[in-house]
Image (cartoon, rainbow, N blue to C red; front, top):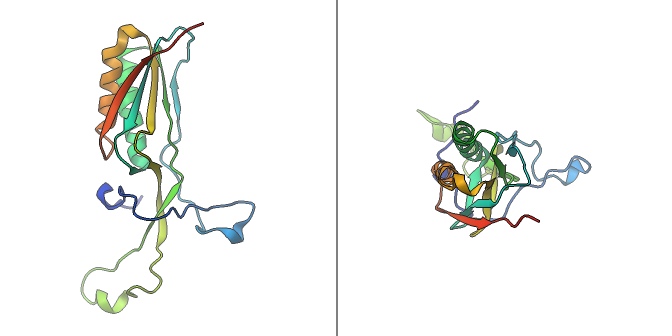
Length: 177
């Protein structure tokens, strides 16, 4: 696996998305080959009908989150929930990384100016995928019992520390019929 650039180089949404990848109409693709996503598991825990508390991690700003940072947030939250609440939670990742991030490989070292092509062919090759998140959009969702409110908040707070940007945790009661 190649070394990734820092998150600050891709977290701002500066232009339109270049994510068109079609299996059925390959000649209409903007992206010729889709990079694999690090995020593969979206639902964790056990979904029970008696959960009465819903917590969501919402974004405070428009930001672009790479799939590896979403996977890191998922892992750290799920590990904390597994250790503290055994099968008493249902945790989902709401966002999906559709957007393709392109990267122009640059030559460095002596004589690099003679090897690079400047701005010609500067479109770049696909390096990873990211999710474009709007302000107020939920990223993670967690259902649990009211008694384990503090553990659930701590898990989402740990997950937020793995993501760029600022986030708020909102709580609401689930009405059971």
